[in-house]
Image (tube, rainbow, N blue to C red):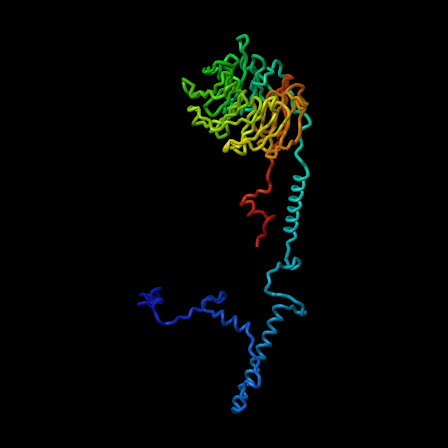
Length: 475
């Protein structure tokens, strides 16, 4: 039977056995459990009392004398050892004060450097310093003029209409009089999608579907139609309103429309009977509608100066989440913040002229800026924390311009003044770099105002950091 068989080495046997075993520990890492730290501390810190002749009785024999000499020699040796230890620990070779057991960085001259690595690190530091200084010293500049101008003859000069939208397939839809045109931003070609034959009727609102294939068109006569942009044919008509449809907004397969009849209707375009929900809370015309990017909240602005916030799942019960009453004129311009889902921007009409920022979670206004002009459109910059406003009439000389504001401070970055008449509406390109403004001067002006997205070079992936010779040395 092997000596390892049985329970001789079992934990129970070792614990219960009265025999004391010696475990010296690792040869490099001492075992603290086997040390008497108190005794070691006493030996290093306590001084042996000097032995005087009076403490030794000379009435003894020669052994007492020898014992006395041995004590004195032991005390002397211990004092000498202590002095040498203090010299080595607290003084250098020249006798100057120096503490060995103190954490300090090694002198730079003693570090073995690799010229190639040092050069790359210095280059990195210089690039980082240059980028930081550039970012702090230079502000992003506004374009001096528009990048393109298109004619827009017979455009309706009406604040309450929403007759322009830029779709996901990079096609701009614009209503000019009784006609609806499509302009392809990639090819520069335009085509007429539809024409209203009824005298006195014309498109009053336009919105592209999320896939960019269908366009919803509201009419002065209260009609609401869906058109296929590829075949240039109508898909279907949606009913429910009794007066002009001034604003429309998509949320997936749900098309929401607002009318001068003071009602908001949700149409499920997949169903045969499309009207799925109808609410009437505004006391005046509904002139602005915007769904949040998540599709769970709807903001509606009315001519009675109010904003209602609706929960998508609760609209059929006509119960709104919040009613915001800070404006003093009609609210047409609405825009949800792309990087804070609970933030909504709104703009008031001529008698108000204010841009307000709302916290939708609490239903409170968190900022308000007096733009001193009618606000006809708002567009958030998706690449920088900014918001662009388009302005109409003003009593203080700030009319017919575009203003760029920093968020959240709402300090003005600059102004763009090219329209000779009021700005009617704004729309943004699919990539978020260009904004088009429709003016009552019968022009469409394209602005490269938002610019390309900023590349954050300070964020380095774990793999790049691991493989980069610039950031770490291979040992």
